[in-house]
Length: 532
Ligand code: F6P
Figure 1: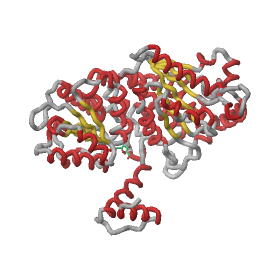
Figure 2: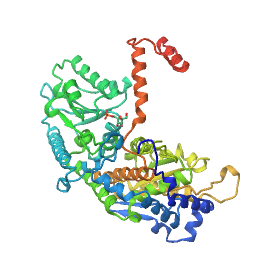
Figure 3: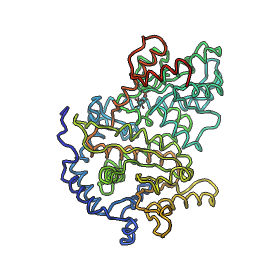
Figure 4: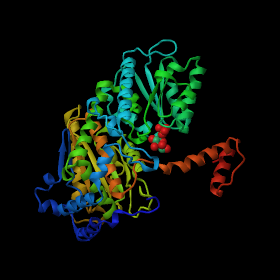
């Protein structure tokens, strides 16, 4: 019921018991827990196909987990998961379901249920169209205006219309098809697109305009710049050089992209959940149909696990509940994602959007004010460079951050060098947990007891990456379900967009100067005069 939070998490019995348990567990040190229980690592680990998750270095005991599982029951998590998968309106402020799991369901697994039949048809159709286009382009059968085959693809999009395909193209570059360059432009800062255009040949470049809304200022400004660049370089028929992925057919047509160059995404695909749709087009061109299907299949395997495994063996459920424990009961407000895998360097940025745009909320789904902390700050970077930049904070800072380490078991590189990477990853987890009891100057001491999860995977292939991204999506969903918030809207980005439009019009002289605070006015004045 709008405006009233009738069922806040802190009113559940399990939440109260967890608060009591926190007081009892205050003196717990992981070092002692490992010493006391030789089976701890096995007891607090779960595997699924190609991934293995060791969550034993988190600040939990068996009792913590039992209480968290009770909390999941009392918050109706089971029902909420069923609603997600069955096309229920899980995004009430936009009156929509969230059907990203359907996007990765194989054709023969899509059930044409009453709720989903139209959508199911659309998913199959657009997926087939995307792969048809990908096959043709990779075969050199898609030409520009002069007929020369397209050999460079530039994805213009931002947020979820950029971070997902960019992550995939980067992480799976070993599957990249030689001969077709893939570039990404997101920033409204002209440097971004000019850098790409400087290397591009107008005859052989295709721009993919990826925007669910097709109203996003940054994307439209860059798309129009691309159009002007084509014209400036003698291309009067820009049609063959554009493709749009969007839910806004009218705006796409007004831009001049028509017919088979328009790929549709449904309004039930959230931007940060859209990599599974035709928004993944640029990545699909890079890695090809078979590998992209593998990516979808990996995510689908994780979906099946999430939808069917009992909660005590359900990896996203367990990781989500541990996140709640750290965040809400131990006051750990930050979570670092540290892949010991250079190819996943962009994963922290991807997950920052996924988690913080989904769960950075202070109003509950029923309209009431949320009375507990919601999203942690998600940050991170690739290990081992991160060790030489931010690990001081992780080891000795006064604010704790929980951590996910990600580590492939098989890199295709020289094994001795690779082993050093493995050693560094494992050493960090151990050091953060154990600390150091050696006496010495205070500044040399490490308290330890800093929580981390280690996610191992056999190798970084499309299937595994699909599993990993779906795992984080569902972990995010679990946390939202416990808090009672809607993870699928993002109203918090609107005010800044409105003000930017107003300030832009004033700077351009299209609008008379408005009234701003003295700081904003001073900064606008300095911009106008060109003086820092
Ligand atoms: O402003 C936030 C946001 O709406 C994100 O949720 C989304 O991923 C991004 O902007 C891009 O939106 P669009 O795909 O509509 O251009």
